[in-house]
Amino acid sequence: METEKITSPPSGYLALTLFLLLLATAIYLGINQYGAACVLILLIGVTLILPGLIIVNPNESKVLTLFGKYTGTVKQDGFFWVNPFTVKRKISLKAYNLNGQQLKVNDKLGNPIEIAAVIVWQVKDTAKAVFSVENYVQYVNIQSEAAVRHLANSFAYDNLEDETEAITLRGGAEQVSHLLEQELNERLDRAGIEVLEGRISHLAYAPEIANAMLQRQQASAIIAARKQIVEGAVGMVEMALSRLSEKNIVEFDEERKAAMVSNLLVVLCGERAVSPVVNTGTLYH
Image (cartoon, rainbow, N blue to C red; front, side, top):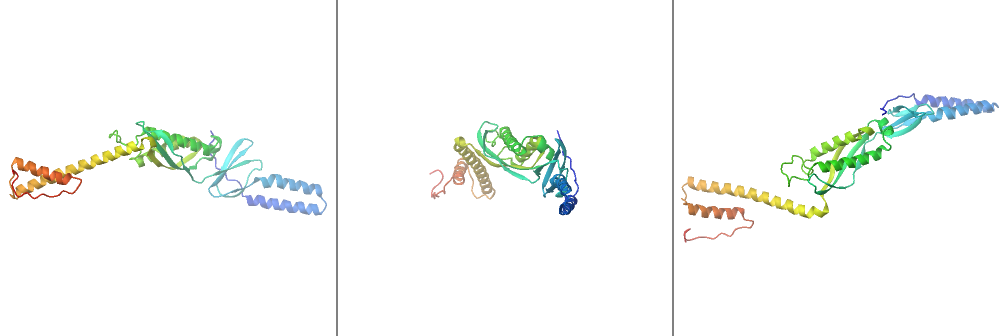
């Protein structure tokens, strides 16, 4: 496997100056009826100097091969001259955004979900990108889809079915993104690609189970809210009975205490406002 070699070719301005001198010489010889010499000098300039001139823009590179052998990569921007028989291939070093399509896969528990990811990548090793894979852009697309599928199969959507799950796709965004980046870098290292960032951009249950899962989430939320309300109400009832006893405002026997606890729990746990009823008698009538 080829590894990247950085090369620094000579300046192209010297070669361009030489070509202009040869051109001026050819014109002079042509004016003085030296046709053969004029043609020869022009051929030298056109075939050996001009084809070797290259321009490398910022955040770009040129991969050079000579007669099938990799000779190096020019990463420095500027105007250069290389061997005119060299094959020059431009490789961009800019960062790319891959907005992956929505994939329908099963999570760890077998629930069908829809998932998509946004991946930021760039070419790190130009030699690997050119010589190790057929098409490095297509390679990134296919391997990214495979990594997202593997990630979805490795974790549950949420922890409704298994509360012991430490990482879920919905709740562990940072951990999931870190694992996605790690797996992508391992998969794309062969092509000389570095993943700068990878994040889940879309996550949802598949349409066929979305309504059922929504009802389940709503039920879980209601149960959790009810649990918290009851815990708070019990604490308030306990505090009320304790304060009344401390202040010696009223003494309760077990029956009266039970009646008061029942009334307070109805008031505190009810969904609607309670209409008070004034009791002019006693608790026993």
